[in-house]
Picture 1 (cartoon, rainbow, N blue to C red):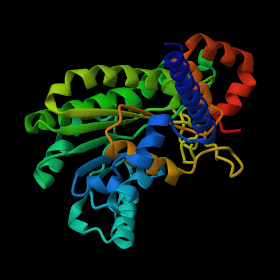
Picture 2: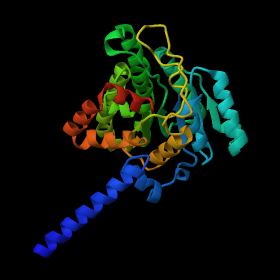
Picture 3: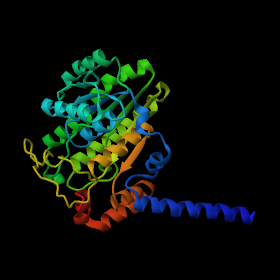
Picture 4: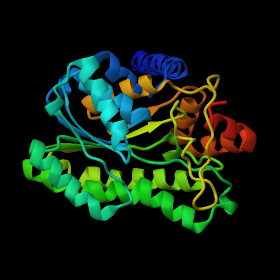
Length: 321
């Protein structure tokens, strides 16, 4: 009996050490690391019809490239049609995708009354949507007390209500086919409170809750729900971020020396998570990844560490500095 207990203890200790090493050296959570090594590759998504919102730049653009090179059929949406056409052209030029396999659908996430027509256009073209990637969104930078209620509403409209609006229109088609996959670009800010980004943090927490509930409801319809949670990533996110006053944007550029994940790597990991239909993934460099683990599995410890770090350090971590 003692030998059995010793073996169990030894096994648990070994797994703990291996897990800690993987977390410290990794750039994503353990399950995604395992999926990258032993799971399905994005090539398993060949011929899937994938709708990516916010695909004119940043993670959405890079994800479009990742999926086009494995043979997915794409719907590209964002507000800037000329940038969407540029991304489409890159997919055709670099990966040999047929022009007819990529549909450009300009879309503003806050113009809810235009979403039905966009969905109809997509269905008329492809007949279905296998994977909806809700990637469009905008960040926010301002003190909590100095952020107007109008900005709070605008952030929620873009990052939450726009996502719900489009998903509620696409979901019935998936339910009818008894197959589908909803993917949301959440954030580590959806797991941990990010100072000077209260509105954005609240919006991403809302996405987590809304779609965690949906995941259970559509399980019997063979529909998967994945929440992707990136940490600091290189993009144009700060250039168009909301501030505390309505009508203004941050217009801040990221520095090449920032400790941020490359956009291409984030898109690569996102594609792997989608291929393996993972429920939730954390995609971040350390110490952000480690802090996310602490906050998830020992909330008291995570919050204690966050307070001990203090405002300045937490702000630097959020900005990759």
